Each structure stands twice: as C-alpha cells, then as structure tokens.
Image 1: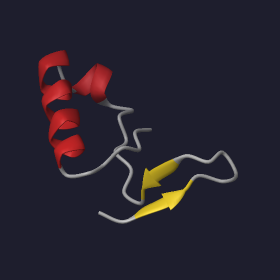
Image 2 (image 1 turned 90 degrees about the vertical axis):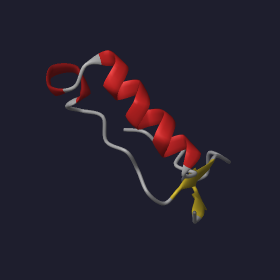
Image 3 (image 1 turned 90 degrees about the horizontal axis):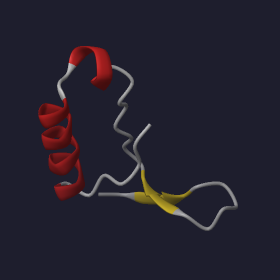
Image 4 (image 1 turned 60 degrees about the vertical axis):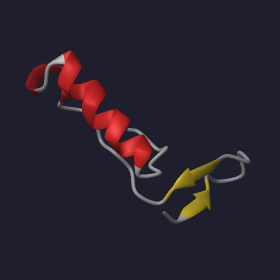
Length: 48
C-alpha cells in the first residue's frame, strides 16, 4: 500500500480511500464492519 501525508496535518494516510456513504442505507452493520476490516487488512486507513 502506498501512503501520503494529509495536507499539513502530519497524518499519514493510504492513497486509496474507502467511501462509506452508502453503508447506512445499502449495507447492514455486520457487512459494513466486514468490509472495513478487510480494507484495514489491506492497509487502507483512510475512510470517507
């Protein structure tokens, strides 16, 4: 996974972002957590 700095905040985030806008209306809580857990295992740490 490639990472970059988020502006001047000092945070290091993955260059790939997982958008979660439709998690509430489209995906149940258990499935949403599974998707986020899988993303974290792949090195994604930037969630929108």
